[in-house]
Every structure is written in structure tokens, then in C-alpha cells.
Length: 450
Image 1 (tube, rainbow, N blue to C red):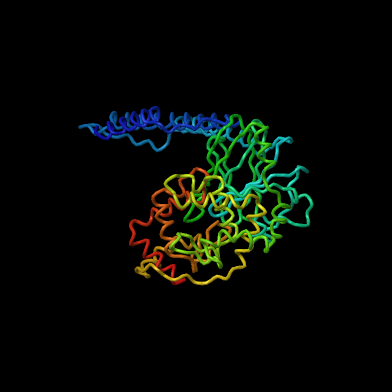
Image 2: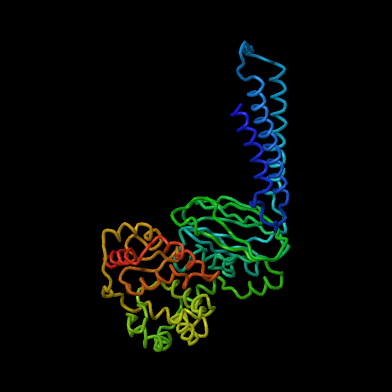
């Protein structure tokens, strides 16, 4: 009898918890309301079966419980019962599968007038590519992927010259227009999902997968990778911003094309040297850094990383917090480089400066630091060389005092707390694994050996 009561309470508790649960669907923001209906049907079918099967089991326990003088009747076959159970099961399974197959048929058939956007996944961020004025995406080849060509666009394909490249976790879309999203991966298996759009699809290395949807509300919606893709899987997030058509077009016109990125490689080193003169006052003539002025070493940093930090200072992603006094100083200095051309020239000049080892100022348990670094090397490389495709800067031969200061800034939220600082946000979470200053010192002591 006690078991029967427990089963009945389990059923009642499950139904009440489901009805009172705070975990319901996010507000729908696309055309895929039929997916919600399909999930609802599945809930109803499985819920009814769960309730009936468990209550029937409880009834059997009560009715046929052990009684003095009562003997069980052995009946190995009951054709009538088997027919009923088979028929009911068939109807239930069909009720769950048929709507899903219908919706899937709609999901794989993309409207002819859908605009095309490409999402490229990599550990642990997203980049996007839009067709240019010709309306066509250029050809790509994974063999062409390099720091100067992250998408692997064929330089010989004229359709690719005006492709709009977005090196950001933000994907923008116009309201009300059907979108065919092409997806590919540079490294491992990923999954592109937007809960509010009710869409998700695996991204398989070596293949181009797709999904389509039509936005129905303006707003900001989170992109998730819902496939375990490595140690940083939990920080692989992005955002879809749905704008009005006019706002979207204004934004698209402000983005760089593939031709622009090719032209940016042609830097003027003489102009870059002149523009670097104010920087040298703090960072040193050879980019060696100056601890007394809290100016880190620049020689050896990846050019894409430096450009991203300058853009962050310019936009207020870094240095916008009044508590970040040093960041605010850098915001003022970045204003001396008013154009993208000036930034490229300075970075080009910094890349010519010699990379020398910085003097170690922090000591700690190197062996313990080596253990901690096993997580860090997934992004920063086994030798602290930095991995450009992950947006992770060099650590080896850099200023240890500056690394320590930034770890503390990430841990406290002084850096990386801005909603548009995607890479910084990842570091905020990773820095939490360092429970105290001693572990930071141990980690940096090991980095000093690289």
C-alpha cells in the first residue's frame, strides 16, 4: 500500500510541478510557432501516458495486493489486451511523429526569396558573412584560412570581393525577412541555436548545414552553442540583433568587406612609426612596456588582438567604467588614431618591433602553475604563443605584472563585464577558476618559463 501511495504522489507532484514550473518557453520571436505546437503535442501525449500508466500501476498494487487466501491467476496471453495496447501505442506514436515530420518538411524547404547569411563557428566564438551588393557569397576554401583571411575566401572569385565580414559575436538581421543561415565550422562539431527563434542545427566540420527562419519582433536574442565543443563550450555565446530594415541597412553599409580587409594589409610603416610616437612615451620605443607607467608590453601581440582592444577603447567597451582609471587613460590616447587606416599603420609598425623576454617579477609554485595552465592552453596555446583564431593573445615573454593585473580585473568584473565584450566575458568566467592570489602567482610563474 505504501508503494502505491508513493506512486500516486509522484504523479500528482509531477503534474503540479509542470503546471507551476517557471521553466516555460521563451517568448517566440520567429515564424516557428508550429515547433511550439509540436512540442506541446509531445508533452500532452507523453504526459497522459505517464499519468495513466502510473495510476494503473498504483491501482493494480492496491487491488491485487497480497491477501490471505487469495491466489494469483497466471495468464501468459491475452490477444484482446495486446490488440488494444498495440492500437493505443500506435496512435500515440503517430500523434507525436506526424506533426514533427510535417514541421521538418517546412524547415528544410527554404523560401526562394530568403536572404543568405553565413555563420562560422570556431572554438569558442562566432563570425558572420553577408553577401555584398551583388547578392552572392564568394567561394571559400578551408585551405585558405589564415590570420589575414579568417573566412578562407577565394581571392580569385569576384563574387567574394564585396562580401561583408563581421568579426564579432553579434549577428544583425532585418525584421520580417526570411533568412537562410548557412553554417560551417573551422574546427570541431558545434551547434547554432536561438531559443526565441526555436531553431537549432549541428555544424559539422567539412560540411555546410543550414536552417531558415523569419524574425517577427525586433530585439536582442542570445545565440548558444548546444553541442559540447571543448573546455570553453559554456562561453561560446553570441547575440542576434533584429533591427528595422532601415536600421539594418545602415549597419550593413558601415561594415568592412573582404576587399577592405585585403587593402588594410598594405600599411604605411613610416606613417605608423610617426603615429606610434605618443604611444612610445608609455609603452617604450621598442614596445617593451613600462611597469612604472602601468603600460604593458606591445611587441609580440597579435595584430587582430591589438585592433580589437583599440576598438573596445574607442567604443567604451573598455575604459568606460569610471573605476577603470587606466582604461580611461587609454580611451583618450586611442583618439589620437582617428581612422582605421591610422590604427592599421600603427599596428603594422608595432609588428616590426623585436620580441624579447620581459623580466620576471612574480614567483610561485611552477609545478602547480603548470597544472592550472592546462585549461589556459586550450586558447593561449601550449607554449603561451596565443592562438589568433580564438582571439587569445600571447602570454609567453609578456609582462607578468600586467597579466596578474588583468586576471584580477577579470575576476572582479572591472574588465569583461560590458555586454559587448564577448572575449572579456569569456575570461571573466575562466578567471573564476583561480580561487586566490597564490594560484594566480603560481600560474604566472609557470607562464614565465614558456
